[in-house]
Image 1: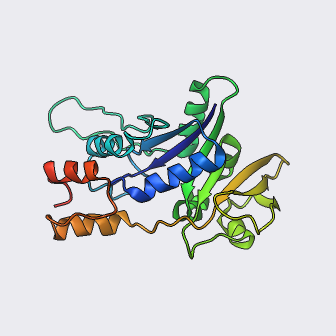
Image 2: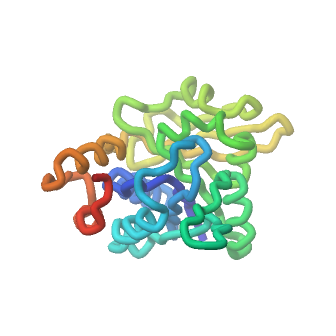
Length: 237
């Protein structure tokens, strides 16, 4: 089995998320892509606009037509509530812990991937124990047009103790992934696959703003079922 973990806020899940997952599924011949809404994102201390429950519900609706896409609740917030009005636990979700837990729960021989957008990949050095991540799960990085990550740019996005040691020929074109090889300070190597020039340029922040300002406008970048859910539950108003 080849399984990719795709974590994120999904606030809301949009067509860009689906395009990234489909591209990764096809290019790397993935059996499953696990969409995992995050409970509390350490790099977003202000939290999320929609609740975890709403983000899970929207993500279920967004992926329901692709049998290879599944929801994962591995990053669900823990609740230490003792009575009405108590808030959920804001213990940060660290991807290194999530991948460790996930790998232990998968059948032996499963190959685990970590799917990231280019923006998330650029922030990788700020992640908790970032240098461990490429060796827990093979990285798949999806870049947008105009945000292509050349070898020099890739190196600046890697944790300090991880280096780029080899890359495939640059003339490889989509949908073929560009293969890179990474190495850490003890000599362990890992793969990184770059999905170049995916045609998505969607900002969840801009989508929320549009929904807030134009309640009757249908953004063309949201799955219809997700938009209907947003309107029914009066999200982002």
